[in-house]
Length: 312
Image 1 (cartoon, rainbow, N blue to C red):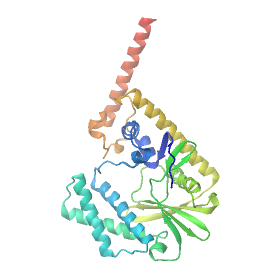
Image 2: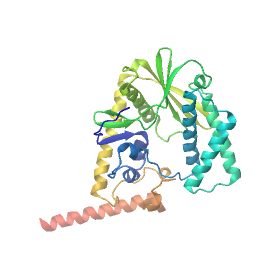
Image 3: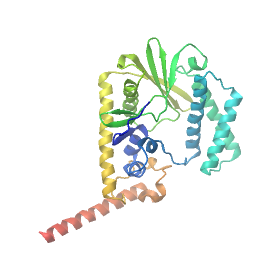
């Protein structure tokens, strides 16, 4: 896909949206400051994983991506080859992250992750592709973006499979997100908007199905989402609202480079594994940090009120 030379000033992605709603301060540190890089580079950049589970999740997705690319070329991976590739990628990722994991525990988690990949291939949406059944299908990069009303958004499906006169757009979640069900559905509906704007795919909603394949507990759950013009409009509204909030936060961060006045995390669960925690006011406790922030803001307001009275 050819990108426009003048990229839109704003962007939206699920990752950015979830981070902003979980912790505005962390969002400002990650996305809210100017960067000489393109937005695609900015959206794609990743910190080193903070936990072994995060590392495994990334490696599972990367391994599955390589496997599906070869499958598209009709190259089938054996079980032994899959195990070797995945284990090597995990070891490389551990080395890059300078993360130490006991060998026995590492091997146990590698086997569990391999089982998760195997079960994914047996899911209803993917089994026909793995079995070589006749299908038209394509895979996509999550970093492929589209533009709507001046907003660059990232909502590409992982796969699109043509069957029974319609395209099924498939989104795969290797870990269940901690967001509400309704907001997740609206986020996924933006995948349909992405497809409608994509060259080579139909330009009307009736041509698509939308399926989410999500790992929960010890198995994959598959569910199909309803697609209507009204729901897509709601999804677009959600995206635009998020972008408005992101624009405001970005301006706030520039006005207060210390970020001391920006809202902190909604819940302390969002602080676990945060890449910015060591330098965050909430490093010793979120509740205490919020109390200090509120107290400092009251003192500042009182000081400004006193100055206004003295100059009146």
